[in-house]
Length: 488
Image (cartoon, rainbow, N blue to C red; front, side, top):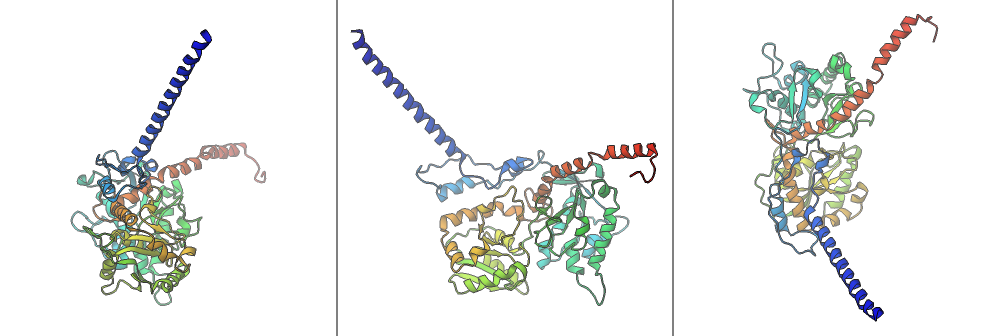
């Protein structure tokens, strides 16, 4: 009798345990699904890499949109609402401000190149009243030295203390970095040509003067130049001085004309070009209202890595809705390029004489999805910015295959293009140069890129000083021992 009663009891117990286990499993799965849904799509900026994540803080509007759980991607409408306010960049009191000591170089190295002459003892213009303007045209694309110098000068004004990425300090021992205000790109553009039989042009002579000045400074000797910031954005600027000043941090457009022991991504900073075409203000265009599929206008026959331009020209010139033509900035060239990019879905950025091109930043300002064909290109702020969210990258070897590129571009449909177009509108401010600088613009982004180099600089300096004291002591000991001259 006891055996008969035990069997149903065991059966009930087993059923209860099985039921409990099933319920727990379902709850566990549902909780994980909830976590996965709450994480959403990946951000285009990796906040964990920033020295202060508030710089790129992204605010959500708090609205949630219902969607089909079977859909891998959210609808265009729901994503548009989710993206509202994403480009709200936060700076302010918690911003990691970079302390910069700037040499008071003579005006011939900076604003004197803009035909400005100092009055009295000051080597700087009074930028609160009037300051020299930078020349337009293609000169503008390599004008970062101008904007960074203006930003440092204005950092001393009481009204400009908020939302700053860098401030000027007058005691070099308090500084994080030492800034060299040499307008090297402008020097090359104005004085890079040789006159007659001269062995050195004015640009070469200025570089010689700069090297002589810097290497004699206490600040340079103290760090061997490791904490110095030198601007050489034009690929041909500083070609002489760079071999003597290479321990410094160079601000460059790319590494195309630099050996890796002189300039590399670990030591130096890649900065954007200033775009030349007009920004697309109040852009209400969409996929259907941009009639040109793929756009390129510029120099087609280039040397070095630029051979691909002429190869692509022959591959694409007869394709429907593709604009691939020679063009320059003369005449009405800039206006025509602006209209062309503003009315195109995709814009080609192809390697030229060097891996980088201003065309990429013209495309970003036009909200024309860039198609980058440049295997050796380095991009600004790529340690914190994911370009794959708003650019198409194509290997050179693939682009040169018959029909490969055009088939790839035609395979990108409206929804995917629209997402990339929105990303471009979010990030365009990161590539905008202006005075005075504003939160999250190109000027402040470059300062922040330098800020992220500071810990590595300090480590190198600290390691270089490990044996400094013992070396001095060693000399004292050896001298006190009065060893014979031929002892060693």
